[in-house]
Length: 370
Image (tube, rainbow, N blue to C red; front, side):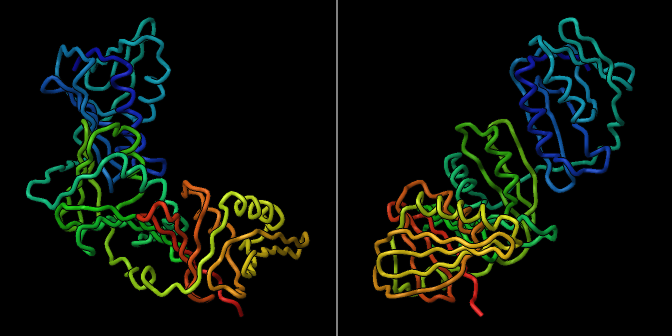
């Protein structure tokens, strides 16, 4: 194997492979990138045992001899990223070393046994499929993924993002929830019926290199294949049934109030500085017709309160507690300043909406008062 490649052409591929592998892989083989040179292209293959990928490079290369090597991904990234010259020579030496040469830099790096690398499959013929734009995925990552449960290691539907065109006609729904808060974005959709629950880290990896290319998702049983640009990803569907959210979304919200998002964020951040050491930073909300009194109390430091003016409908007096950290993360994805909070009952979930963005909804469960 012998090839000269532009540093800029291979570096993005190596970074992508490292992101796919992740940080917690203990098996040396899975800490590596498989480099294959064939058919006038370079193929970089990576896997963490659950998700795998192939990154194809067809430009910026000059192939002298085809071949295959297996090399530690982190080592390759550390070397290539620090090279000064653009042209990089990769040459396999005696089945045990990979020569990496660029300008005056010359190295011989130990490689691994290609035969030990797993046989990965990326076939998706006849699978269910939908396509999404990078803009949609970016919005999902920004607005929905913050509600994914990241605090438990055990896999469940709450660890992923539901992408669903089956439940509601002509709608593609994307949902995430950690059981305390829930985020929903709905898009008009005329494609085929499709449902999957995918890890948010996969979406983040796609967005790193997707540019303007449409992303195609394929699913069969518990497997998902994703294709875009010069990349193929194989991963798994998170098994389980996501709880129905329609009763929560469609319940009778008898009261509502409009509030300034930035004023509320500032009040919450000031309060959080007082109770930052508490395991569960809680604030009390006492809502009247024209304002909200928000109170904070710490047994260690003291207490504070602050009032925010609101516009309300059908509110006399409502009193409930909220986890501040949850509320801050819920407010952040809203792009406009004015937020409407819909209330049905103090013991039922609150709905947060920007009335100019009807497709996006946030739900937060208040804490039950004893």
